[in-house]
Length: 188
Image (cartoon, rainbow, N blue to C red; front, side, top):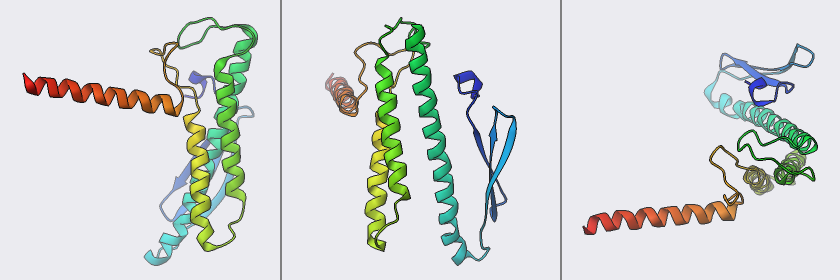
């Protein structure tokens, strides 16, 4: 799968579990090697298992965040390479100028926000009450990162919305038009 979307050199992450033991590993295709990571063992008592699962959830989130950031770096590299070689977009077929690509800045912005999120997650909370506030800030940074990713597809045009505000305006317009169309059918 990674090869088909030009991510053939990126690490692949995995998890083996019997729901009491969680074995994390990864595969590095550049050196053709598996790397074994942490093993988290969950207490079988229901009362303890719930709190033990917090460690598993945090680890899974960390793995997904790391993979997300690796994919952003790969997209930045591909975008810069495409600009250097003046290759057409794989999705739209349009030729791009060699000064740079519009999407490169968006990928870089997404990565910067994801790195800020990661740095915040690594800061220890000052108190128990601080945990919730920090988590909300961190997830807000991650949400902004995801929203700043270019959303190109085979149906993308030059005027398509890409910012959160533009997407919200589009959603509002479509909902209004759909509502008005339904009302007009009822009136007939």
